[in-house]
Image 1 (tube, rainbow, N blue to C red):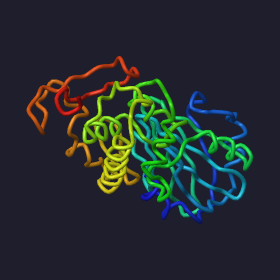
Image 2: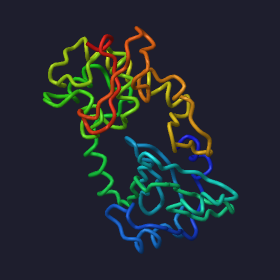
Image 3: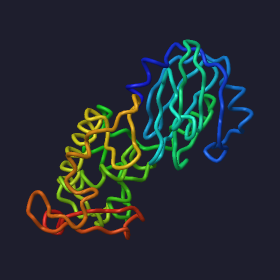
Length: 264
């Protein structure tokens, strides 16, 4: 989404902003957000973990789209954009920036420099950072007794890994998702690092995975769901060995799909 939107948003001056629901706000009031956005200029747009970070000449607008959110810049908002556009901001070129969230599972922050630094420091290392090595992965996992799949998705340990990609990386690495993170050794770290980085890069290149609501910054569905080996395939045969894939919500309350044979 950031790659799609940044060229259309950076350099633009923001006009009137409208917010349909307050329950997506975190640490900011409706009044402060709307007044703060109006008249600002977008200097940059980046990403940290699962957050889009819009840097203005006042503060940072931080949007975590959650499971059902998307962002776009459009000339003509559709009826769905008007209905589900939680945040709509007019731009000086006549277009509109929209944060669209059907189920309102995402969050919006309006952070000054100090608040941004505290927020960013809370998050773990970025898996696509060149400095992220198998050894760095091992340190990030630490001595946690929790299941490796749960730790992978904990943003304090590792930034930006969601449920789909945790399932896929553990499958390719041949690791039981319920295994305690502290029981993984250097070889496990090496395999998991290799596949985690590879899968995330491939998913970004494929514009993400659209299982239900996700859309890119241009409103199109992603394509990586066509390459999934285990996620959303519970009860189907493993594409590697033919074993029926199992599923459980016991690890972290999210669906975990795995192969008993390939992930012993």
